[in-house]
Image (cartoon, rainbow, N blue to C red; front, side, top):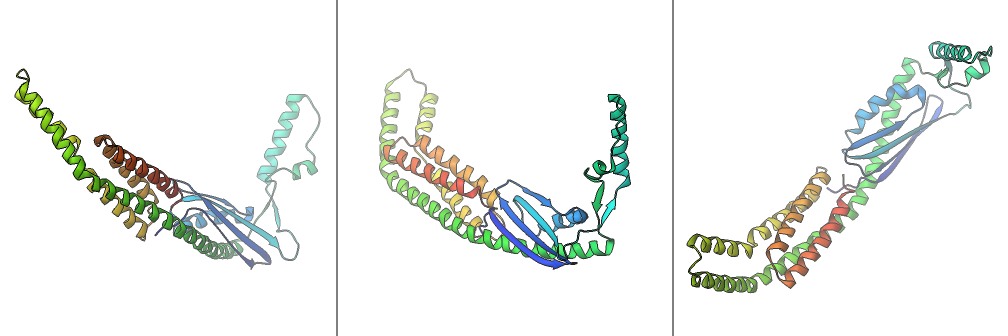
Length: 292
């Protein structure tokens, strides 16, 4: 199954006199990397949400944004964090001593510092918030994956087209081989005759030359492996598991066989076919970077 790593999903609900909305967006990434922005009072729920992600995603850079708006217009209850407030006061006094100043930190100024006042939920509300947020995340992830599946189907069509083009080119190379083999046989025959006429050439040197010339024009193994890799690529595309990483590795193997084919066969038509295969494979490689 082909699923794109690019997508968007959202969900919303009313909870505890609040309107809560969640938005998700994903882009390409080698691993699963999630950034979650929650209202401060719900930050203890983040670890549970991260765990839930693993059931829906395997790769991609994910951004999750959760917004909360009180339906009655009031603010969530504030709690003074005396520890943080005292740290600010102590730091301000130390700074005043260093500067030789008698200025002190005013209450109005202190109240504006980050963390002095914090919004908190009691344990019962926090458990309910976690349940609500997990439900929202499931809904948003389902919507996200639906969009990624649609994009994935478009990617599949393009990738399958690239594979078909490479297959066709392989067949064209194979059709050219009988004529090429005849050329190589004649070259081999001429080379052997020349070596035999040269009485100074040792028999083992002749054997080495024959082996090298015989191997140079034989691309049977490369074509067999190339076909096998293309078949495997289709299997990964049709499989149920995320196959982006495996397809990326397989592309390297296909590239290796094409390069070997090009280095072994010195023929204008085959060189042209090799260049065409490399071009299609590069397009294939670019597309699979967006596959989960």
